[in-house]
Amino acid sequence: MYFDPKDGLKPPPFKHTVYNALVVPRPIGWISTVDTKDVINLAPYSFFNALCGDPPCVMYCPNGYKTGTMEPKDSLTNVQEAGEFVFNMVTMDLLEPMNATSIHAPASYDEMAEAGLEAAPCEQVKPPRVANSPIALECKVLHIIDLPETRTGVPNTTVIGQVVGIHIDDDVIVDGKIDSAKVQPLARLGYLDYAAITPDSIFAVPRPD
Ligand SMILES: Cc1cc2nc3c(=O)[nH]c(=O)nc-3n(C[C@H](O)[C@H](O)[C@H](O)COP(=O)(O)O)c2cc1C
Image (cartoon, rainbow, N blue to C red):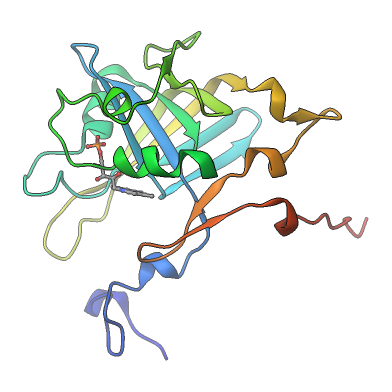
């Protein structure tokens, strides 16, 4: 089939918006920020990715409003004000707290504490990282870019940051490499689906030259 997305993202026979199931798997950026009163905010963003390796840069996309409001998401307001965020890796054992932090809550709600997660301090940015996450990237904002609005006028945004500090749990470093089988990163598929990187799903392919 073929369809033009300007006519809607749920053409027959689809029962749900289909786009989120078309570009998969997506890494999940578990983004920590702080507001002007130093309240911690933590939320998952699967419109997230690494953009370049040297210097390392990442991006995430706060799309739409907080549910039931016309207010921007806290992960956008906080970086607009402070210019700093932290990427925390979501792993299989952090699935439940990650999902809990996607709750739509007022800015005064500290998702990290409410999800039972411990905060660990960062070196170069104010937002803390999730202590139990094996990889965390401290980031300073480079650009905040408006994307096209939805057909009903709801805003979409991309936040691009440069990584200024990198935390790696020593336990996932094996033979001088990151052992992804030990990290077990979680990825987002469409709908309510996820995929996990498990030891038997990893294989290496030599380059042709
Ligand atoms: C796995 C997962 C991925 C998500 N990805 C995004 C995303 O890329 N962009 C977005 O705007 N919301 C995304 N959400 C929803 C946000 O996490 C949710 O709106 C959250 O309440 C935003 O919190 P904040 O206002 O504290 O930033 C995702 C939710 C989950 C569970």
